[in-house]
Image (cartoon, rainbow, N blue to C red):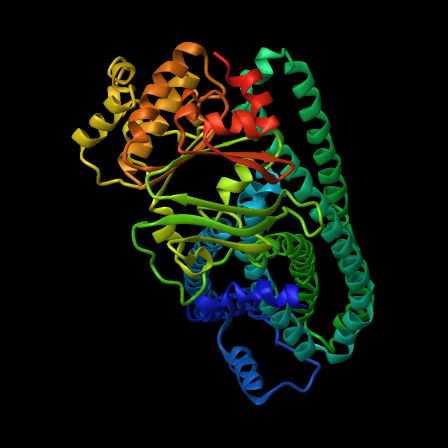
Length: 597
């Protein structure tokens, strides 16, 4: 029930427009019934020149209308009929156009708002959420799942009201004409409801599986397109094609199961109509021959019964699409209801520029709720202006430690602070505006060189961007590009080498001009020539800043004010280079194997 309410609540924001649209649907549906009702005077009075006979006791106003039609000259009625039909059609289609426009406008606004809401939610979630989810799956929630909601709102909601109103109009008509005969419908009607409900439930399960398969397809697409260099380098095209083929075929099989059940809806409703039609002909046909019922009224009754087939069929489709939408809605709300593990307090304050130190006090951290600690009992002070290098074997928690400083994660125990203030008490923006990060995995956007350097600072003047590029030793290769600083660099900087991407990332950090700089193995994946350029750029970038550098091949490690040695998530040594060579066996071994010139 909650899932239904969540789906319906999407209309709440636009309830005024929706109510107007529903009113227009009601009027359009009445005109549909009205068009069919014109069969009575057309057949009985105009062509047969006979009286209209209704066996039931009908309301006085209808009796007056029939009395008037029975007494009007058939030739006059013949001349009036085309104008009445034409006006009725014009009014009906005017209201159809009006409600369809309103519903589509509401639908597009809902989809716009829902995608925006999902995107805002994703931006608010902590990094640990993304480490547990596939990117393609999250993309599928915003694209494929929201598209299913689109169908549910634009088509199903419209059909729900239009077909219900139309069905109600036909039911009122047949009950007015012949009450006993109309009761037959309600004996046959349950025969169609049960299979429709069962099919709808199955479709909901199939839809959820289909949405997961589409997420898998999106994941493969994202991985193989963004990692096309790796695919080509390892000649794994056939492997990736085969992997995609299997996922694509799985989606096809589920789609066909869904289609197979959808195709059952028309014959079920057609059978319902045929049964009703046969009963009506056998029962009411005799009354027409006996003169107790006029032929026109019989035709109207029969036409109304047959006309209920299409609305019932569409209402069956409404149930099917709604079940699919409910499944999509569940997946969407899984994201919307997710809570970030790292939250900004409502009363958080802006922190001023760093004046004294960054401190970690008794910090213990794990990525899970188990006791598998990545960091344990970390105590560290980094003074303003210091260059602090962090070294240690792979997987010992170096990147995790520096990720606590911009508060990408919160420690389970202990505190991380700046100038004595716990980072949990300050705003994200004021904290992260003070931190520049250059990592080994440089991410660039599919935009211009200029936009990537100025990212986060869109109003930076061109001369400042060029000056930053020169300091990062990037200006020379940028001006050789086709459109220089306005050159689109491709997805994730596809058109650039590793060293070029790294230098643009350094230029971006220079433009940001943050007082705290984090270098996460910034030269570890570069060749010797690229490393030399990048290292020179980093040397300029580090001037007059507080620097925390995860060292891999950094030549600056010897000049570091403090070197932190990590092993199994614990600090096993800290001090200057010469001190650690004597006091820390792990550092001596790392230095001899990785840093000895």
